[in-house]
Length: 290
Image (cartoon, rainbow, N blue to C red; front, side, top):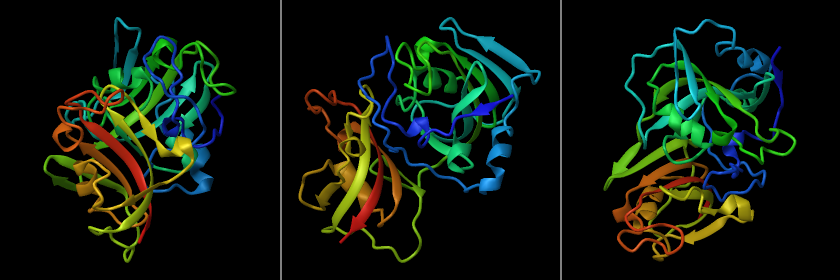
């Protein structure tokens, strides 16, 4: 019997990873700060969606156990290419404890799938380690040992300390960027309705965001501060790559942006936050445009 905890938002959307023995400085603040997309499911279908992925007693086609303790069982083998770092993928998933308690999943927010940027510590370390073993179309069960999941801290009231995780997921597709400019890749993951205000060269905008470098996840997070970031386009206060990307957006757009180092902080880096020659990744929503 699968039990479901309806947690505030999706765990993937939280600032926290709360890991012991893992280099991760983020702390839980309960803010929904991941941009989620996909066709919304009717509320009457939520219970059924929990059971859409293969149950734990389904006979696997094959399985592989890794030295780090991760075990992957394949219930369906896809025909797409293998996943790699810097892929934005669509995932249909649920995450549960060994007793069958489901504490996370896109079905909990009535979405058919969520976007996930591979290799950038958007979730616990076990996710990235396992995902690069998969290919598009795979449907799997992934056993993630506690030290590669929520660790000694767990998530108070949701995930007990030292809990192993069982992740059931299907890799739906690799999402191609909506725009590529100067090697900046831009996804409009949730487009607004037609007629919304476009961002211009001198627009005043308000947005919420988090940003990661390759080695430091979510080093800056406006959701955690609970204060939107106000910006005057063209004032030189943001990196060139973000400026170029925002010009593709409109009021209400939810955007994911991969910015190469040369369009970010380059050979200088950002002292204490972004090492030199590292790319950065933004996950943001444009709240207002004037």
